[in-house]
Length: 330
Image 1: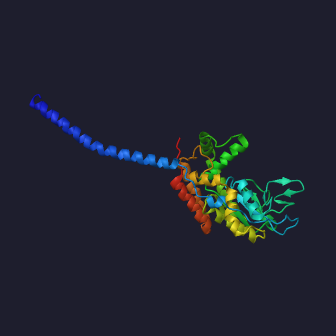
Image 2: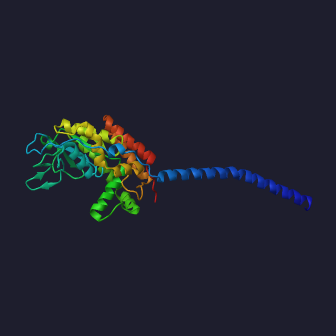
Image 3: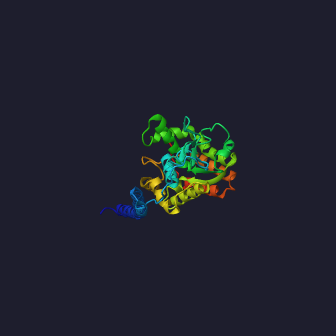
């Protein structure tokens, strides 16, 4: 076996190997468990979790719209929205189903010589959509008080998703983009225009809550509207405002079906899975940009904290950003 010194050296080496193995084994177990746990979470996120929408798929709307009138006493209701906070097709569908008016939703900016201007025309208007103050209306809102209902509806969406969605929409509309813009394009746009985008998003609140003489009718929250539990409730509240403004509306029993038809099963499922319109990637922000979003929301809460409903919405956006925003440092 060798000399006594060699034997002791061999025994020491064996003891060191045993100690190292004893140390390494639990580390390997922990690492293996962590990898399996992470893989499980990834597998779960990759699976399509189907919502049970059977009761909506089989629903029917009983409302029978009245024949269109040549004269009416109602006044249009302002519906202001930061772009992509309410899809045009969704707005159109909800209003048409709730009121029976085929052209009940109109854009303030649309016009047709002799038949339509500023939501006033030859057919009755329920809601007048606009993106004021991003696109100026040409004169002070308060000068139109006599021509519009005293309450407005404001569509709201978390800026974390509203800003990239709006940017993507502009790329499609003006630059020939199809589908989701590349992630590099989003990074370039956010890094160049982040402050401007946030300023545009916050400007809606000041223009309507602070600077106008209209009352807040409701906040139509994008995230609620696309939620299977909260969506019908939001449409029911919109129905009640239309009814209070003098419009003939569908009965309450039709509301869940109207909601489902307007949002569509694909969008409901998409929001449930990713909370965003596209699947290529989830738009991310730098840590500094995350702080800009949080600061903007905090400032609005300080300014309009006496509006409990708005405060609750803004605080929920704050929590979502803190917990779910994707940090993307390049």
